[in-house]
Length: 72
Image 1: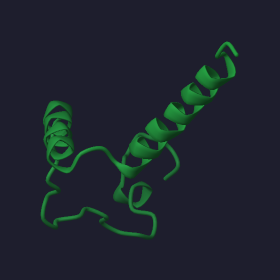
Image 2: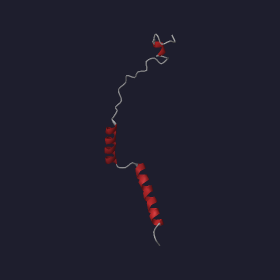
Image 3: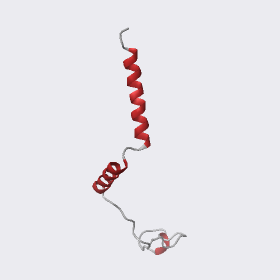
Image 4: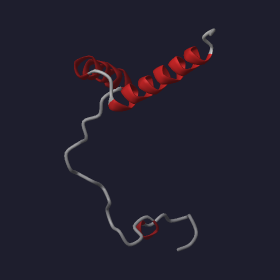
């Protein structure tokens, strides 16, 4: 049984039996379709909260740098 001369099913079905899933297939989009959908959603909804906060922090940092470098 341990040799490979006669392949038997016992080597392939260790406990779990048939693990094939016959449910509905998942709806997968290609990378281009995902990017296009994401850009459409961003155009409709605007920037995310993370992007807004990152932009605000950068603006504060630049303003502080500008204020620090002003000539008296």
